[in-house]
Amino acid sequence: MMKMLYATVAAATLVACASVKPAPIQAGDRCLRCRVPVGDLRVAGEIIDRLRAPHPFRTAGCLAKYVKANQAESFTAVFVTDFQSGRLIAADDAWFVPAQLAAPEGRRTQPDYLAFRSRSDAEAARAGQPLLRWAQVVAEATAN
Image (tube, rainbow, N blue to C red; front, side, top):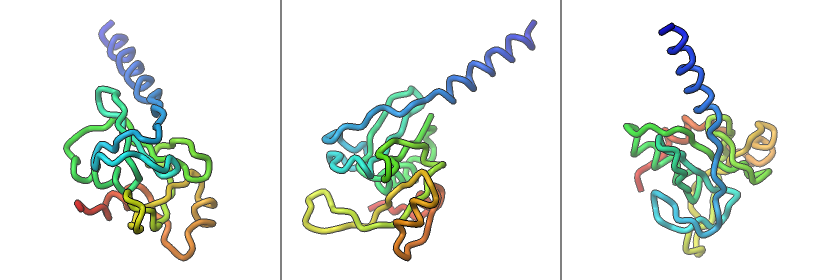
Protein backbone atom coordinates (compact mmCIF):
# COMPACT_ATOMS: atom_id res chain seq x y z
CA MET A 1 0.00 0.00 0.00
CA MET A 2 2.80 2.47 0.92
CA LYS A 3 4.71 1.63 -2.27
CA MET A 4 1.59 2.51 -4.27
CA LEU A 5 1.29 5.83 -2.42
CA TYR A 6 4.97 6.69 -3.04
CA ALA A 7 4.64 5.77 -6.69
CA THR A 8 1.52 7.96 -7.05
CA VAL A 9 3.20 10.93 -5.33
CA ALA A 10 6.34 10.51 -7.46
CA ALA A 11 4.29 10.33 -10.67
CA ALA A 12 2.23 13.40 -9.70
CA THR A 13 5.43 15.33 -8.95
CA LEU A 14 6.93 14.40 -12.32
CA VAL A 15 3.78 15.42 -14.16
CA ALA A 16 3.59 18.72 -12.25
CA CYS A 17 7.20 19.58 -13.07
CA ALA A 18 6.84 18.60 -16.70
CA SER A 19 3.74 20.74 -17.11
CA VAL A 20 5.38 24.06 -16.18
CA LYS A 21 4.56 26.55 -18.92
CA PRO A 22 6.06 30.00 -19.35
CA ALA A 23 3.90 33.03 -18.63
CA PRO A 24 3.62 35.60 -21.42
CA ILE A 25 6.13 38.44 -21.13
CA GLN A 26 4.85 41.90 -22.01
CA ALA A 27 6.86 44.86 -23.28
CA GLY A 28 7.33 47.11 -20.27
CA ASP A 29 7.51 44.29 -17.69
CA ARG A 30 10.38 45.05 -15.32
CA CYS A 31 13.43 42.79 -15.37
CA LEU A 32 13.85 41.05 -12.02
CA ARG A 33 17.62 41.64 -11.97
CA CYS A 34 18.16 45.15 -13.34
CA ARG A 35 14.62 46.58 -13.02
CA VAL A 36 14.84 47.96 -16.58
CA PRO A 37 11.65 47.46 -18.63
CA VAL A 38 11.65 44.67 -21.20
CA GLY A 39 11.87 46.40 -24.56
CA ASP A 40 12.57 43.76 -27.20
CA LEU A 41 10.47 40.65 -26.59
CA ARG A 42 12.62 38.65 -29.06
CA VAL A 43 15.49 38.57 -26.53
CA ALA A 44 13.56 38.35 -23.22
CA GLY A 45 13.75 35.50 -20.72
CA GLU A 46 11.87 34.21 -17.72
CA ILE A 47 12.36 32.23 -14.53
CA ILE A 48 9.58 30.30 -12.86
CA ASP A 49 10.49 30.13 -9.18
CA ARG A 50 9.81 27.21 -6.85
CA LEU A 51 6.43 28.76 -5.95
CA ARG A 52 5.63 28.79 -9.69
CA ALA A 53 5.68 32.59 -9.91
CA PRO A 54 7.05 33.92 -13.22
CA HIS A 55 9.77 36.60 -13.25
CA PRO A 56 10.70 38.34 -16.53
CA PHE A 57 14.19 39.31 -17.66
CA ARG A 58 15.17 41.88 -20.26
CA THR A 59 17.67 39.60 -22.05
CA ALA A 60 19.21 36.14 -21.88
CA GLY A 61 22.41 37.75 -20.59
CA CYS A 62 20.59 39.48 -17.75
CA LEU A 63 18.88 36.18 -16.91
CA ALA A 64 22.22 34.33 -16.93
CA LYS A 65 23.75 36.91 -14.56
CA TYR A 66 20.84 36.43 -12.16
CA VAL A 67 21.07 32.63 -12.29
CA LYS A 68 24.83 32.73 -11.68
CA ALA A 69 24.46 35.16 -8.75
CA ASN A 70 21.67 33.06 -7.20
CA GLN A 71 23.03 29.54 -7.60
CA ALA A 72 21.67 28.49 -4.20
CA GLU A 73 18.09 29.24 -5.34
CA SER A 74 16.07 26.50 -6.96
CA PHE A 75 14.11 27.39 -10.06
CA THR A 76 11.25 25.34 -11.41
CA ALA A 77 11.99 26.41 -14.99
CA VAL A 78 14.17 28.82 -16.98
CA PHE A 79 12.98 30.08 -20.37
CA VAL A 80 14.45 32.24 -23.13
CA THR A 81 12.79 33.57 -26.25
CA ASP A 82 13.55 31.88 -29.55
CA PHE A 83 14.70 34.83 -31.65
CA GLN A 84 13.28 33.22 -34.81
CA SER A 85 9.73 32.44 -33.64
CA GLY A 86 9.29 34.74 -30.64
CA ARG A 87 8.19 31.80 -28.45
CA LEU A 88 9.57 31.03 -25.02
CA ILE A 89 11.61 27.81 -24.91
CA ALA A 90 13.52 26.01 -22.17
CA ALA A 91 16.96 27.61 -21.80
CA ASP A 92 18.62 24.18 -21.70
CA ASP A 93 17.18 23.40 -25.15
CA ALA A 94 18.36 26.65 -26.77
CA TRP A 95 21.43 27.50 -28.84
CA PHE A 96 22.94 30.91 -28.09
CA VAL A 97 24.86 33.32 -30.29
CA PRO A 98 26.80 36.24 -28.77
CA ALA A 99 25.45 39.53 -30.15
CA GLN A 100 25.58 43.28 -29.59
CA LEU A 101 22.16 44.48 -28.42
CA ALA A 102 20.89 48.00 -27.85
CA ALA A 103 21.50 49.13 -24.29
CA PRO A 104 18.42 50.17 -22.28
CA GLU A 105 19.00 53.86 -22.92
CA GLY A 106 19.41 53.11 -26.65
CA ARG A 107 22.54 55.19 -27.24
CA ARG A 108 25.01 52.32 -27.32
CA THR A 109 25.18 48.56 -27.63
CA GLN A 110 26.18 45.95 -25.09
CA PRO A 111 27.24 42.31 -25.38
CA ASP A 112 24.44 39.81 -24.87
CA TYR A 113 22.94 36.75 -26.59
CA LEU A 114 20.36 35.73 -29.13
CA ALA A 115 18.65 32.39 -28.37
CA PHE A 116 17.45 29.91 -30.98
CA ARG A 117 15.47 26.68 -30.73
CA SER A 118 17.27 25.09 -33.66
CA ARG A 119 20.99 24.79 -34.18
CA SER A 120 20.60 25.57 -37.88
CA ASP A 121 18.89 28.90 -37.11
CA ALA A 122 21.68 29.75 -34.67
CA GLU A 123 24.36 28.82 -37.21
CA ALA A 124 22.71 31.04 -39.82
CA ALA A 125 22.78 34.00 -37.40
CA ARG A 126 26.18 33.53 -35.83
CA ALA A 127 28.36 35.53 -38.28
CA GLY A 128 31.60 33.99 -37.03
CA GLN A 129 30.55 33.97 -33.38
CA PRO A 130 30.66 30.72 -31.38
CA LEU A 131 27.54 28.68 -30.68
CA LEU A 132 26.91 28.26 -26.96
CA ARG A 133 24.62 26.25 -24.73
CA TRP A 134 22.87 27.60 -21.61
CA ALA A 135 25.51 26.28 -19.18
CA GLN A 136 28.20 28.14 -21.14
CA VAL A 137 26.18 31.38 -21.15
CA VAL A 138 25.76 31.17 -17.36
CA ALA A 139 29.46 30.35 -16.90
CA GLU A 140 30.41 33.45 -18.94
CA ALA A 141 28.01 35.74 -17.04
CA THR A 142 29.57 38.58 -15.07
CA ALA A 143 28.16 40.50 -12.12
CA ASN A 144 28.13 43.97 -13.74
